[in-house]
Length: 288
View (cartoon, rainbow, N blue to C red):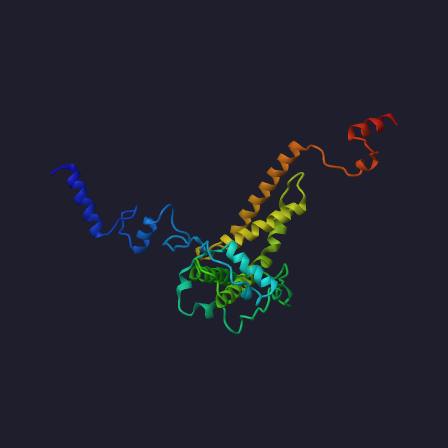
C-alpha cells in the first residue's frame, strides 16, 4: 500500500471519529464551526476560554416615513444610529437562559423610559464621585448593557435585508434606551477615575482639558469592549486604556510642537495695518 493510500485512510478515520483540536482533544460542534469559519473566529461566539464581541447584521433598511413620524427626533436618531452603525456586544451564556430579561430588568426596577431625555433628567441618574459601584452592581450593569445590545442584534438580524417594521422599530428604540441607560450608569460611576489619573500624569506641554477629553473617550471605548465574565474589575481594564490614550496625546503633541514650535498669538495680529504682512510688522516694531 502506498503512502498516499495510508494518508487517505487515516484522514477518513479521523473524520469518522471526530475532528481533533490543536491540543489533541476531540472537538465538539461549536469548535468545528469555529474552525471552519472563514478568517478568524466569528465575533460573538462563546468559547470555553473567552467571549468575544459580535457585530450586528450590516444591512437593514430604514422604516417607512409614516412609521418614523410616530417617534420623536431623539428616537429617530437612535434608530438611524442602530442601522448605520450597528452596536457590538460581548456575548454571555446567560443570554440564552429562559427568563433572563426579567432577571436583568425586573419590572419593579425597570423604570419606563418614555424619551431619551429621561436618562439625564431623572433625579437619580447622576452619580457623585463618592457613589461607586460594588462588584455585584458592576457585573449586573455590564450584563444589562451587553444583553440590551444583544437584543438589538437579534432585532436587526430578524429584519436583515428587509425594511424595519413598526413593532421592530419600537423594540429597537426600547433596547437602545436600555443600553444607553446602562452605559450611562457605568460611565458616570467611573468618571472620577479619569480625573484621578489625569492629575497623576505628568506630561509637559499637554493641556489638562485635552487629557480629560481623551480619557473620557477611552473610558467609553473600554465600556464597549469590557468582558465582566473574566472576573476582573472594570477599573483595571479601563486604567490601561486611559494611560494608552494619554500616551497618544503626548505623542501627538510632540509631533505638533515639532512642526509648529511657537503658538499662534492673536494679540500680535491686532497691530497689523492694511496690506501688511507679519514680516513687515516685525520690522516696523523693531524700527519704532
